Image (cartoon, rainbow, N blue to C red):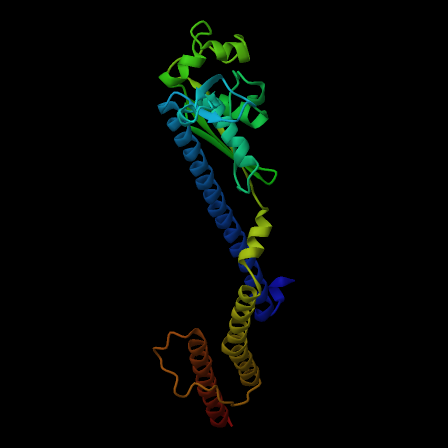
Length: 310
């Protein structure tokens, strides 16, 4: 049925199919760009986490004031100025090792307006709060088995990213042998979990979570009425060209050929058309004109032969 359809209809169908294919290609490209942006954002977040952890490790641990909620050590300091005033004032500082400082940092980020969330986790966790979820457990196995640094996936409208945490000498002081671990660590977390690591081991991952909007929402945020109007305009221009530049000349030549087939001598409109024209319609017009001339010559020969035989 489509074979016998008009050129205009076929062109319309081809244009629609082409737009659909271009749209699908655009969606794939948009998805790749969007996922690349999410990956870069996740990597940047992990970079910040590593930088913060390195800063804490550089100093062994950090001390905070007026924060007894979680700590690994406590230190009471008498303010020197208060001694001079004769009213001694004692201030209490609480110590945080790198792991504890990073966990509390992640909690502060989670409570903020930050788009990305992160946490430190391990399958050999010391603190029950650091127990990995299904994605994180899979990511830890993956980076170990494949010997890679990172793993990521986009599922259920959430982008998940995991970067391997490699044990350094500063980590082994708390996570090596439980016998060599600081007393405040074993007192707080016991001696069953979180130990046995060696320098260079994959201790766990930095897990980053970023909400991801559906691809359709991203598409319609980028493609608006102006873009749709341009596509419609492109279709109208192409359709008008097909109608005026192709269909109408073919219809005219078809009507001319029909009249020539009945013996009528009608003009083809080949006057002024260059023999070297690369336009297919012009070449068709020249061909029909040659056919017209050949028919006229044949008719004259037939008439001459008929007159001679009388």
